[in-house]
Amino acid sequence: MRNCCDMRGFLSFIVLKLICKRNMSGEDIRQELKKRKGSKPSPGTVYPVLKALSESGFIQEVKNGAKEKKYKITKKGKNELKAATRKFCMIFYDMKDEFQKRC
Image (cartoon, rainbow, N blue to C red):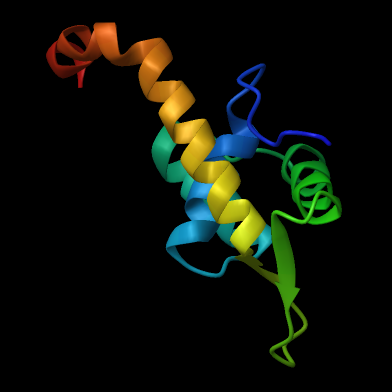
């Protein structure tokens, strides 16, 4: 079984976290990432992540009749996000004071 958020990179983790907040399209995610990091990732960066998350059962397409696909998180995805968040906190908790100084 593939884990979505194995911490080799944070993009899957961030995408799953964003979709957990609200159903989103690839373009919605690209716009949100642009707000956060200052540059908009290419479709070739975001859509393979969406495909992998979908194939792993962490997200699923929402049927809404529009041209643009939207994705929602599944129960399996919520469980994976909880586990990944715990792992993230365990790895970086000792840096919280440093984060507060810089953020």
